[in-house]
Image 1 (spheres, rainbow over the protein chains, first blue to last red):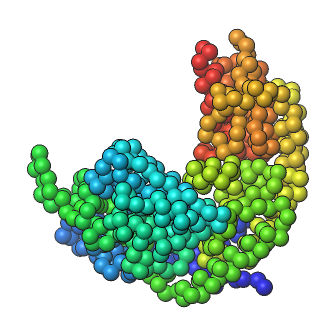
Image 2 (cartoon, protein in one colour):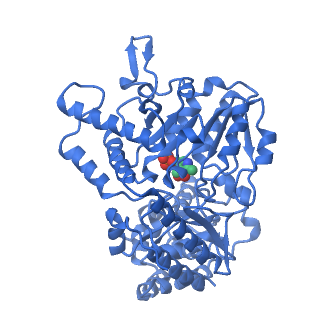
Image 3 (tube, each protein chain N blue to C red):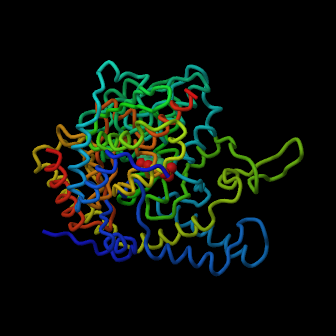
Length: 401
Length: 138
Ligand SMILES: Cc1ncc(COP(=O)(O)O)c(C=O)c1O
């Protein structure tokens, strides 16, 4: 059966790629953009842009309204409950750094900060560096063969010294959903704050942050078919209130003197400087687009495509899949073949996949892998992309044999 | 511009005759097999190049006047690319290393993407290390 994406034509880049013989299977790195977003950016600049939350003039009022409407749309999309719980940053990485600085005052020497072994550098290094700054201990939760955090081990390791638990919702290397429903209560029992890196998870299916029950949730616009340069931080009110300000300047200040200042609370107090205005407005357009889709149909399409990808790889004797991917992506190697060689030959054939350590060097070392090839899917991919990939893979393997 | 040494001119001709990506890939892998030998004891941390996706070791065996590098990698295609790089560089003077247009060399070979500014590419890191090594001797 050949799967066809009914949404493919909403994304102009897919036709452009086809015209230059490129097959895009790297959406976990960044996703292509729907036409409505491109139009929104175009409109933003061609009708006139103005800074937000500053001037009274008409263009400024228009910008500010569109900007704040996008905040409301984001809150609606993830079930935040109120737009005041949404802080715009410049990326998921910046949102995690915001947390690592904003929560620094809660960490004392000897406290535990708990992360998992599969974290992306963005959800590892800010905590590692925080631990070093505060002489705290960074605790690494082990994962099992399926690529999930080991819950028995977690139960032992999360304890009264735990202040923060930061884990991914969906692994960008293993494609495994993490058992958040079991993990988060372990931290909550001990009064620890919970942080979910939803950079990958938010792109597949629609998630309700209040149902997840985390204190903070971080996601990335550019992976969610929105513009790059925008990240999103959600926090529960009680959690947001614990944040200390970290970047200073612009309209985040309520009253400033030469030697002292008072700052706004969230969200504005955490959006120092001119924010990515057009990017946020563009993200609003993307969210309108996504809200108009039948998400059940999108998820079903993505799952079928993922199953087809898995089946094709499993049918090839020399392929070794990393862990047990459930959604969105598959990382793999071919026996006796260097991933860089395979990647080179796939690139030569116009297959755009990622190869290497996927911003998760400690995880790859832990798995004993020098690297892997990662194929990742967006809602616009269909069977024709996978067929081209498999043809190219077979050619490459034959050449390298 | 420096004239191409004979060996380089010959390789260039073979790559320019390669009509398909398969032929180019086969040629690259063949060239990789012709790298000057590097001993396992030379594959140490000092000679290892940081910043490559694959393991690469570079050994400087230059004389007073002329550059001479040996290199090896665990990835086959990269071995081929290294061979083509060394072919163009070995025998040059240090001054010539600064003026040589390597982007043009790889472009002529039909391999221009291999010197792209993308950080995941190993060849740029190798080149940078060569320049550092050459500089420390002047
Ligand atoms: C799991 C995960 N976390 C965080 C990030 C970083 O996101 P951003 O590019 O928005 O900083 C990524 C993107 O590669 C990711 O896959």
